[in-house]
Amino acid sequence: LVDVSRCFPAADVLSLSLSVLQWYMNGVNYFTDLWNVMDTLGLFYFIAGIVFRLHPSNKTSLYSGRVIFCLDYIIFTLRLIHIFTVSRNLGPKIIMLQRMLIDVFFFLFLFAVWMVAFGVARQGILRQNEHRWRWIFRSVIYEPYLAMFGQVPSDVDGTTYDFAHCTFTGNESKPLCVELDEHNLPRFPEWITIPLVCIYMLSTNILLVNLLVAMFGYTVGTVQENNDQVWKFQRYFLVQEYCNRLNIPFPFVVFAYFYMVVKKCFRCCCREKNAEPSACFHMEDCCPLHQHLKHTCHVELLLCLLAF
Image (tube, rainbow, N blue to C red; front, side):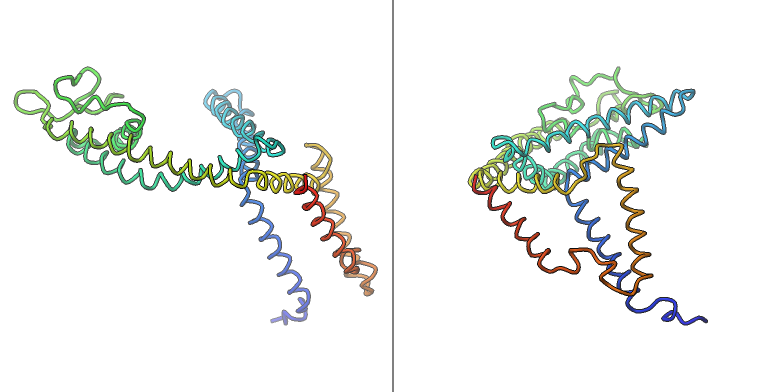
């Protein structure tokens, strides 16, 4: 076997490992930003929509492309909220919305316990042997979720149950009818189903919703205490983001990135051929004073923005 150390010196292996690690950290830092995730999803949906629209003869593909473009429009429109961070009034509100979304995310775990408990019990009491997953999902998840917003389930009261909107065989596009007794009446006990719905709606509409409102109030109050400072830091990072980007608009920026890749490849080849470090190093690498001045400039820019 050929000695690997001869083909790949230790310095080159270490440099390659550090480069891969740096690319990985840059990717992680990129996708930790919500706006970058929205950009990635928007571009992905846009490319997928174009692929589906390239088959106009197939009506299914044409309709799928239109649906994807509609979803992509929502993402790109919501992406415009990012520009509001420069406003003194709207900038902190965006921070409030982001933190409130985090509160909703953790609140959903608590609400899911109540929703699944009520939905499974309701499905087991009312119906038997429902094998269609779509209607099981509607009965266990979707309808209890709508009940949180005040929509009362209509299939828990035997006196007002309408058999015209259900099916006994399960072969139609209707929900399965409730189980019947020997008198062709709903078998489920109303003294259990009606109080169960009342307790569930009392718990979700009053307790859990008010808990979420209280969490929102605490989040808004926390951001409001440091309103001016939050806005200045947010504006600073927005200015830094646009300063570090290229000034060329899309889609011409693709050619700029292609030029940067080719330039990087030539620099790597130049570094391998020339033994003198000074011929291949950048100004930032061979001049520590340049790094210090660059860092000082960023600090002064931050202090200047905070002073306004």
